[in-house]
Length: 87
Length: 132
Image 1: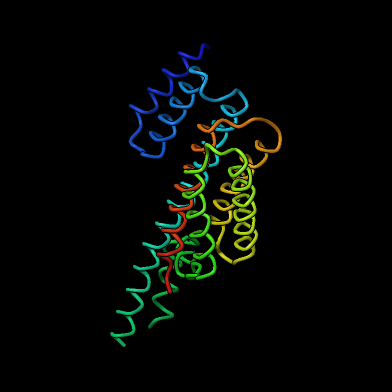
Image 2: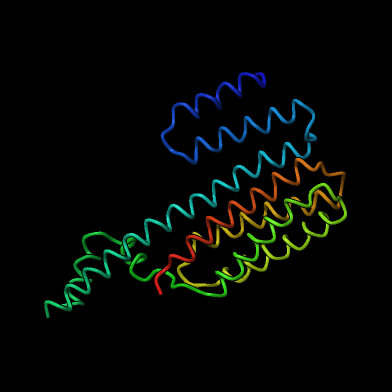
Protein backbone atom coordinates (compact mmCIF):
# COMPACT_ATOMS: atom_id res chain seq x y z
CA UNK A 1 0.00 0.00 0.00
CA UNK A 2 1.14 3.57 -0.65
CA UNK A 3 1.45 6.42 1.85
CA UNK A 4 -1.71 7.97 0.42
CA UNK A 5 -3.63 4.74 0.88
CA UNK A 6 -2.55 4.53 4.52
CA UNK A 7 -3.55 8.16 4.97
CA UNK A 8 -6.92 7.34 3.47
CA UNK A 9 -7.23 4.46 5.94
CA UNK A 10 -6.47 6.87 8.79
CA UNK A 11 -9.15 9.21 7.43
CA UNK A 12 -11.63 6.32 7.54
CA UNK A 13 -10.64 5.66 11.17
CA UNK A 14 -11.24 9.32 11.97
CA UNK A 15 -14.66 9.40 10.30
CA UNK A 16 -15.77 5.92 11.36
CA UNK A 17 -14.97 6.07 15.06
CA UNK A 18 -16.96 7.67 17.85
CA UNK A 19 -13.98 7.43 20.20
CA UNK A 20 -12.24 10.82 20.53
CA UNK A 21 -8.94 9.08 21.34
CA UNK A 22 -9.08 7.12 18.06
CA UNK A 23 -10.00 10.26 16.13
CA UNK A 24 -7.16 12.18 17.76
CA UNK A 25 -4.65 9.41 16.99
CA UNK A 26 -5.72 9.20 13.33
CA UNK A 27 -5.58 12.97 12.91
CA UNK A 28 -2.17 13.19 14.57
CA UNK A 29 -0.69 10.41 12.41
CA UNK A 30 -1.90 12.19 9.29
CA UNK A 31 -0.45 15.48 10.53
CA UNK A 32 2.97 13.88 11.13
CA UNK A 33 2.90 12.29 7.68
CA UNK A 34 2.22 15.65 6.07
CA UNK A 35 5.08 17.22 8.06
CA UNK A 36 7.44 14.44 6.97
CA UNK A 37 6.40 14.81 3.35
CA UNK A 38 7.01 18.57 3.60
CA UNK A 39 10.51 17.98 5.02
CA UNK A 40 9.72 19.61 8.37
CA UNK A 41 10.81 16.52 10.32
CA UNK A 42 13.38 13.82 9.54
CA UNK A 43 12.69 10.12 8.98
CA UNK A 44 13.96 9.23 12.48
CA UNK A 45 11.76 11.90 14.01
CA UNK A 46 8.74 10.77 11.97
CA UNK A 47 9.20 7.16 13.08
CA UNK A 48 9.53 8.17 16.72
CA UNK A 49 6.45 10.39 16.61
CA UNK A 50 4.37 7.59 15.11
CA UNK A 51 5.57 5.27 17.90
CA UNK A 52 4.64 7.95 20.43
CA UNK A 53 1.02 7.72 19.29
CA UNK A 54 0.97 4.18 20.65
CA UNK A 55 2.44 5.38 23.96
CA UNK A 56 -0.19 8.12 24.12
CA UNK A 57 -2.87 5.47 23.61
CA UNK A 58 -1.57 3.66 26.71
CA UNK A 59 -1.78 6.91 28.70
CA UNK A 60 -5.31 7.60 27.42
CA UNK A 61 -6.40 4.06 28.32
CA UNK A 62 -5.03 4.43 31.84
CA UNK A 63 -6.88 7.74 32.23
CA UNK A 64 -10.17 6.27 30.95
CA UNK A 65 -9.94 3.25 33.26
CA UNK A 66 -9.14 5.47 36.21
CA UNK A 67 -12.14 7.68 35.55
CA UNK A 68 -14.45 4.66 35.56
CA UNK A 69 -12.87 3.51 38.83
CA UNK A 70 -13.37 6.94 40.39
CA UNK A 71 -17.00 6.97 39.32
CA UNK A 72 -17.59 3.54 40.79
CA UNK A 73 -15.70 4.43 43.98
CA UNK A 74 -17.98 7.41 44.53
CA UNK A 75 -21.06 5.22 44.04
CA UNK A 76 -19.83 2.50 46.39
CA UNK A 77 -18.91 4.98 49.11
CA UNK A 78 -22.29 6.63 48.65
CA UNK A 79 -24.02 3.28 49.14
CA UNK A 80 -21.91 2.58 52.21
CA UNK A 81 -22.82 5.96 53.68
CA UNK A 82 -26.50 5.30 53.07
CA UNK A 83 -26.15 1.85 54.59
CA UNK A 84 -24.52 3.25 57.73
CA UNK A 85 -27.28 5.85 58.05
CA UNK A 86 -29.87 3.08 57.77
CA UNK A 87 -28.16 1.32 60.69
CA UNK B 1 -24.97 -3.79 57.41
CA UNK B 2 -21.88 -2.20 55.84
CA UNK B 3 -20.12 -5.57 55.51
CA UNK B 4 -23.20 -7.31 54.17
CA UNK B 5 -23.72 -4.62 51.53
CA UNK B 6 -20.07 -4.73 50.50
CA UNK B 7 -20.12 -8.53 50.27
CA UNK B 8 -23.25 -8.39 48.15
CA UNK B 9 -21.78 -5.83 45.77
CA UNK B 10 -18.61 -7.90 45.43
CA UNK B 11 -20.50 -11.11 44.76
CA UNK B 12 -22.68 -9.47 42.16
CA UNK B 13 -20.06 -7.50 40.28
CA UNK B 14 -16.64 -9.12 40.79
CA UNK B 15 -13.15 -7.81 41.14
CA UNK B 16 -13.60 -4.49 39.34
CA UNK B 17 -15.82 -3.28 42.14
CA UNK B 18 -13.24 -4.31 44.73
CA UNK B 19 -10.58 -2.44 42.79
CA UNK B 20 -12.81 0.62 42.69
CA UNK B 21 -13.57 0.44 46.41
CA UNK B 22 -9.93 -0.01 47.36
CA UNK B 23 -8.58 2.33 44.69
CA UNK B 24 -5.39 4.25 45.31
CA UNK B 25 -5.81 7.33 47.41
CA UNK B 26 -4.60 10.81 46.52
CA UNK B 27 -0.85 11.17 46.92
CA UNK B 28 0.44 14.77 47.06
CA UNK B 29 3.95 13.67 46.05
CA UNK B 30 2.62 12.03 42.88
CA UNK B 31 0.58 15.14 42.14
CA UNK B 32 3.62 17.38 42.70
CA UNK B 33 5.78 15.30 40.36
CA UNK B 34 3.33 15.23 37.47
CA UNK B 35 2.69 18.96 37.87
CA UNK B 36 6.46 19.60 37.65
CA UNK B 37 6.66 17.51 34.48
CA UNK B 38 3.77 19.38 32.90
CA UNK B 39 5.17 22.77 33.85
CA UNK B 40 8.66 21.95 32.61
CA UNK B 41 7.30 20.63 29.30
CA UNK B 42 5.27 23.79 28.78
CA UNK B 43 8.30 25.97 29.48
CA UNK B 44 10.60 23.84 27.31
CA UNK B 45 8.25 23.95 24.32
CA UNK B 46 8.87 27.67 24.04
CA UNK B 47 12.64 27.14 23.95
CA UNK B 48 12.82 24.62 21.10
CA UNK B 49 14.55 27.02 18.73
CA UNK B 50 17.63 26.97 20.99
CA UNK B 51 19.33 23.59 20.45
CA UNK B 52 21.60 23.64 23.50
CA UNK B 53 18.90 24.73 25.94
CA UNK B 54 16.49 22.17 24.49
CA UNK B 55 19.04 19.41 24.85
CA UNK B 56 19.32 20.19 28.58
CA UNK B 57 15.52 20.51 28.86
CA UNK B 58 15.01 17.11 27.24
CA UNK B 59 17.47 15.53 29.66
CA UNK B 60 15.77 17.10 32.70
CA UNK B 61 12.34 15.99 31.46
CA UNK B 62 13.54 12.43 30.83
CA UNK B 63 14.92 12.34 34.39
CA UNK B 64 11.67 13.70 35.84
CA UNK B 65 9.45 11.25 33.98
CA UNK B 66 11.70 8.37 35.03
CA UNK B 67 11.51 9.52 38.66
CA UNK B 68 7.73 9.71 38.37
CA UNK B 69 7.52 6.21 36.84
CA UNK B 70 9.77 4.74 39.53
CA UNK B 71 7.87 6.50 42.32
CA UNK B 72 4.53 5.17 41.05
CA UNK B 73 5.87 1.69 40.32
CA UNK B 74 5.25 0.04 43.70
CA UNK B 75 2.16 1.89 44.85
CA UNK B 76 -0.51 -0.82 45.32
CA UNK B 77 -3.57 -0.86 43.02
CA UNK B 78 -1.94 1.66 40.73
CA UNK B 79 -1.63 -0.47 37.56
CA UNK B 80 -3.14 2.01 35.13
CA UNK B 81 -1.04 4.92 36.30
CA UNK B 82 2.10 2.78 36.37
CA UNK B 83 1.54 1.93 32.70
CA UNK B 84 0.78 5.55 31.89
CA UNK B 85 3.85 6.85 33.71
CA UNK B 86 6.08 4.33 31.92
CA UNK B 87 4.61 5.35 28.55
CA UNK B 88 5.24 9.01 29.38
CA UNK B 89 8.84 8.15 30.22
CA UNK B 90 9.27 6.40 26.85
CA UNK B 91 8.09 9.55 25.06
CA UNK B 92 10.42 11.81 27.07
CA UNK B 93 13.38 9.44 26.85
CA UNK B 94 12.98 9.30 23.06
CA UNK B 95 13.46 13.04 22.82
CA UNK B 96 16.50 13.00 25.08
CA UNK B 97 18.05 10.16 23.05
CA UNK B 98 17.40 12.04 19.83
CA UNK B 99 19.39 14.99 21.16
CA UNK B 100 22.30 12.67 22.00
CA UNK B 101 22.46 11.08 18.58
CA UNK B 102 21.49 13.48 15.81
CA UNK B 103 20.28 16.90 14.87
CA UNK B 104 16.81 17.68 16.15
CA UNK B 105 14.36 19.87 14.30
CA UNK B 106 12.52 22.55 16.31
CA UNK B 107 9.22 21.16 14.97
CA UNK B 108 9.98 17.72 16.43
CA UNK B 109 11.04 19.27 19.75
CA UNK B 110 7.80 21.26 19.98
CA UNK B 111 5.62 18.25 19.15
CA UNK B 112 7.38 16.11 21.75
CA UNK B 113 7.10 18.65 24.56
CA UNK B 114 3.49 19.37 23.56
CA UNK B 115 2.76 15.64 23.76
CA UNK B 116 4.45 15.37 27.17
CA UNK B 117 2.56 18.40 28.47
CA UNK B 118 -0.82 17.09 27.25
CA UNK B 119 -0.25 13.61 28.64
CA UNK B 120 1.00 15.00 31.95
CA UNK B 121 -2.11 17.14 32.25
CA UNK B 122 -4.37 14.12 31.69
CA UNK B 123 -2.53 12.19 34.39
CA UNK B 124 -2.58 15.20 36.71
CA UNK B 125 -6.39 15.30 36.44
CA UNK B 126 -6.63 11.61 37.33
CA UNK B 127 -4.31 11.91 40.33
CA UNK B 128 -5.99 15.09 41.53
CA UNK B 129 -9.45 13.48 41.49
CA UNK B 130 -8.49 10.47 43.52
CA UNK B 131 -10.32 9.97 46.81
CA UNK B 132 -8.75 11.65 49.82
